[in-house]
Image 1: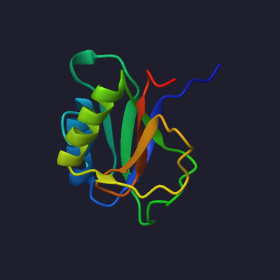
Image 2 (image 1 turned 90 degrees about the vertical axis):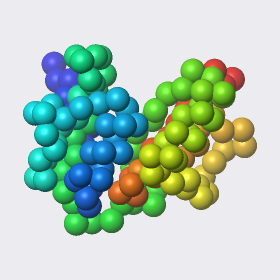
Image 3 (image 1 turned 180 degrees about the horizontal axis):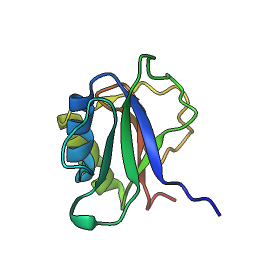
Length: 124
C-alpha cells in the first residue's frame, strides 16, 4: 500500500522559503543544509510530522490552488496568535473570495505566494 511521503511546494527563492517554513513549523533541513536544487524539511529532533519539500519553480503560485497546506490551531486564540506569528515571519494575508459564512480558517500566503490555511480546530 502506498503512503504519502512528502508534500512539495514550488518556490522562487529557496533560502527565503526554507527560512520561512523552518521558523513557521519548527522544522530543519533533512540533510543539514538548504540545497538550491531541492530541500527536504523535517520536524526538528526527530519529531513527528510530514516532510515538506521545496523545489525551484518558474511558474507563479496559483490564486486558487488545487492543493494547499492546512495548519491546525487548537482554538481561536491560538489561531489568532499563530497568524500574527506567521505574518511576522513574512506570510501575507490573502484577500480570499471563497470564504464560507462562518469560516474556521484564515488563508495566508508564504513568502513565495503559496496559499495555506490556519484552521481553528475548536470551531463548531
